[in-house]
Image 1: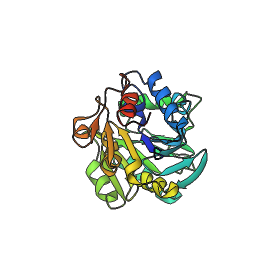
Image 2: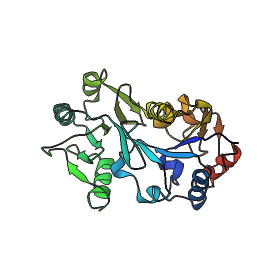
Image 3: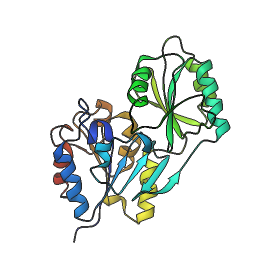
Length: 263
């Protein structure tokens, strides 16, 4: 009899086509088949639970590891959440503004957008989220601000070095490409989220599989025995995985699950 497997999936560029943002029908059916066979399937994303696309939720998962491991739930029940305290959040906002750095401040109850420097990427995301009914978006001056982790965008006018020096001992700064960093409390990651659930379900690492494509997936892909990179993934990611499947839009999830005889 096949052992129960536990599967972890990044969203953007893994579950979804990195160009269109759509979930291929083969991905939906493959994950549903795996769950029907008794395997566990979790999203493992840098996104907070509040910005998971409805198309991903509709696939049907056992739960979510969100915010790079800062939030974990199972069948809709929260199991774990690391949240910065109110004073820490306010302190971070103050220094973001002083350093002329824009940010998306992400929590399990909503997101806050700091856009004083008007970075074009943050402006685009703000317009996308602010007027979308599915997302609960607030500004950084909300008096009740709380968040778990955050992402920053900066440019040649920003004082990134000072901001980094101030917070490097408290947070990991994940390089997401030129002038962007994803910032997570030290000791928390997509990998720590996996370990939490392996312990919770008493599942062996041999029965754990992780799927990803980008640099913020490296912690989980380096952590598990069975690491699957999407063909459309970043080169430095594909160098670190144990198996490369096809492009996310070319039935990559289905191909990998069949390769490993999970479905």
